[in-house]
Amino acid sequence: MRIVVALVGCVIATAPALAQAVSIFNAAGIHFSPDTAGKHVAGDVRTEDNGRVIERTVALRRVDSNVRITAHLVINPIPKDETEVHDRWDRAGNVSVEVAGKPDLELIKFITAYGGRTEYRIDVTHLSPVLTGDATIKAFIDTWVSPAWTIDFDLEYEPDSLERVAQWVEPILFEPSYTRDFQGDTGILVNVVVPSEQKRVILHYYVSGHCTDGTDADEFVKKDNVISVDGVVVHRFQPWRDDCRNFREINPYTRRWSDGYWSSDYSRSGWCPGDFVKPLELDLTDHLTPGPHSIRFVIENVRPKNEKGDHGYWRVSGAVIGIDDK
Image (cartoon, rainbow, N blue to C red; front, side, top):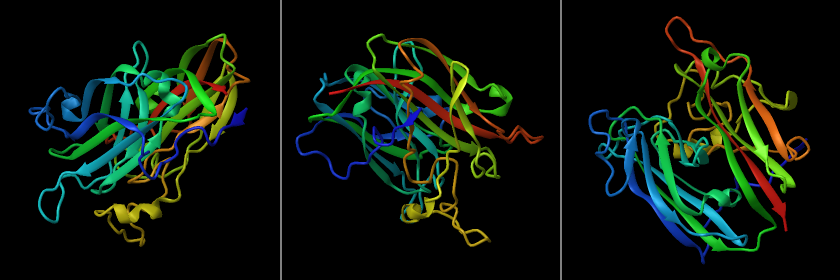
């Protein structure tokens, strides 16, 4: 097993000068309102989940092996007045694309700041096989207020000479609530068939730990994530971020607790308020040879539901990506 650290997930400081952008969402509202789910969107933007999911079908550019794709995302809280916003909290969210017959594929996984604006430019060239032609793009924020947030999202296509080219992308996992009660000790088993011509195969795994009541597990306690291929453990790790203090300035409504820490500063299971979630990338070429395979994802010791109904849970997704070196 080899761990890949430089395939995807880099943040690009400025937009490429020659890029051609496809605008997907423009100040589109995301909120929670069972009675007025579509109140804060316009045009051909559709809503799901009481307004917490918005989606739009667009015609993306046709791509070849010499195009770099950058995702540009801006998340803005909706102000209530000069000093207040409607949603002060850090909220899980993502932008994803539908893939026919497969789970949704996350393009960007993020956590909003505590009532602050965030902006990202992220290289998503590794997903180019599904970012071409007609596509349905979704955006989600786990808010419970209305109004709450707006997002701007576009994909920028730039001619570039690439050392690595993605030939095949298959989403295999999209689970927003991995819990002890449902997944137990056996986790999630998925099947995949690797094409015969594929020489390198990368597993791209997004994961973040949370809890329903803000108490310890699984947000603030390290838990092992175990990945197996065909019954053999190939990787075990604990998703963890201990650099959250670096994002305090973009968390205007963070709160200081009795121990002297600000709520945005605490280390967490794979995420920080105000930042995007970085994926785990594993080169599994030696394990995912051409043909059928099974992959199992297990998160150990997830906090079970207590008498009040509170529990730990994880948001996970994954895809296998076939890469060819030029």
